[in-house]
Length: 333
Image (cartoon, rainbow, N blue to C red; front, side):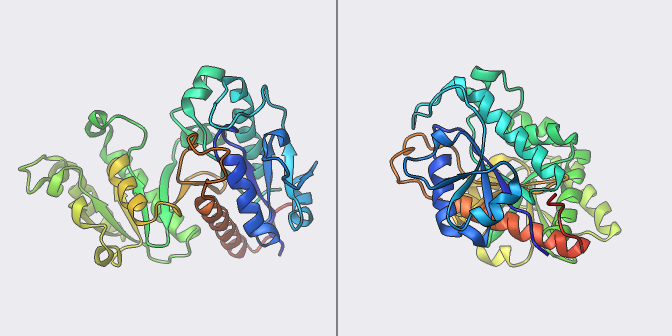
């Protein structure tokens, strides 16, 4: 079976997306075929590109050229100087990637970093981030964000909201949905038959018996007890300050955190360059490097492509696992 290529949306062309894409292609080439959706003029000078009309052309072109599915943008790309005139193009590249991967001619979508404010200023972007926009395009609200590296997989139950809003946003229904989506993805996309999950508490020391907050006693622990009866392998609620060291990580396959920084601080400390953002619950595979646009180094050649390379490799592994399970080759017509 031949796996279809991976679609890569360009992200903000003034950030490090273009140069990390080229570095990733030079590292991976035909071993992990992908094509870039964006304006060819935004790529670094001298990039050996192959303009393609159909994603399947990337399977042969990627050995010697970076395959590019071209989109016209509103302005040139000036490294480190984001231009709202390019906002519509950035959004269109994401939408095109979703359209292609949903059609089956791409095996996964990997997205380069965006700048939400630029998209709002230039095109009235109405979503808190990539994850929410992809969910809207896919017509589903049941998605969660996983951050993954070889040493840790962690999923925040709440994402892009202020810390002050977390206690109200954290509900039993939402936490249960996060656990179920993560459990299903660990089986389907990561090949784990009986996933083990560790669940953090919201408060310091997991509330310390109610002395530092009641969410653990009133909501989190009862939910976990009920889900254990169903057969879920869950531990918690745990004190977040003691669940991410190497010994603790050996006891679970994924951690469920209660809010953004509780999840992202440990993984960025463990593997800052190689972390991958994976959206779980979509009808297609989506990965992304776990970093931003890095305007301060854009165009300097200093950008590290490790995270994008890891995101592409993880997308390929997930796609191949889905192919083996389904026993079918993706439609490449």
